[in-house]
Length: 167
Image (cartoon, one colour):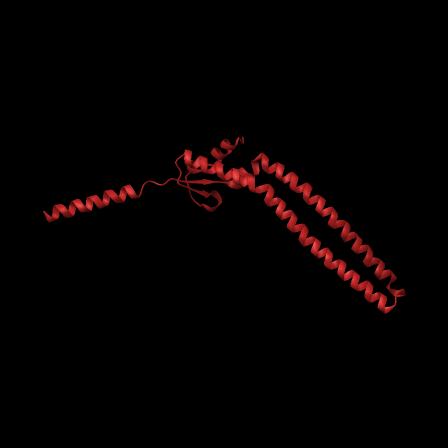
């Protein structure tokens, strides 16, 4: 009787273990490929390029003005008194500092604009990945670039492209 009870207990544990460890399906995706093919990405790249060009033009003008002021200082410094030279040097240093600050600010503005343009596209891609995973019974999706070996059938890249209307 004890052996029968022990056997029944073991069978119950094994049955519970099998139902608790349901089959998990893993998939992979090449997000870089899909992201680069999205029409929204191309539009965002174009907008960002225009934004960056405008900021670069402003910076280039400031840099040209600084270079001209420096060249004028070098050319005219022979005729200047030492106190005037010091004033002009201080002015040039202030301009250099301001130009450096402007460069950092410009880089920050470009990065903020990039994030503003890219975030909705990333979110749309993530939703498409989640929908494809759910529709096809995948419990986990990994970046294809991080996997060494995987069955080709588990690559959902084309399914996500189709979901997003990419040919």
